[in-house]
Image (cartoon, rainbow, N blue to C red; front, side, top):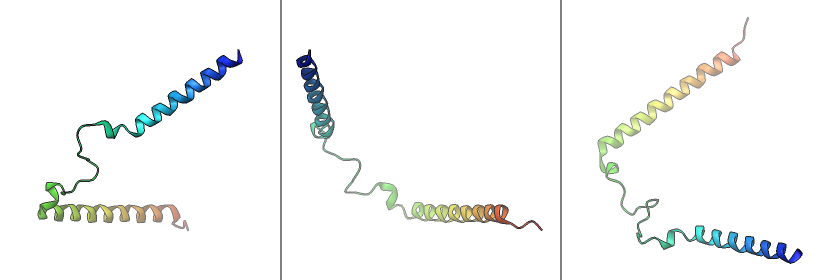
Amino acid sequence: MNSVLVQLRWLLFLSLWRMTYETANANRHTTEEKSYLIEKDPPEEVHNPREKEWTEKAVKKYADAQEKKWQRWNEAMFERSD
């Protein structure tokens, strides 16, 4: 009885080991070599100066709106009631 449990443990260990090996090397087996995480050439929309300007403007306006929201929240939460 004990030998069956030992064999099952080894079988489980080897199968889990093989699964981790396969998941770790899953990207190596693909035929396509291009990585979408890191690209050598930036996307086309970065080259558009107007779009970059609009993005910076939108980020600034969003940051200002968040700052105003937190100022109002702080005033409402910590305002003294006389």
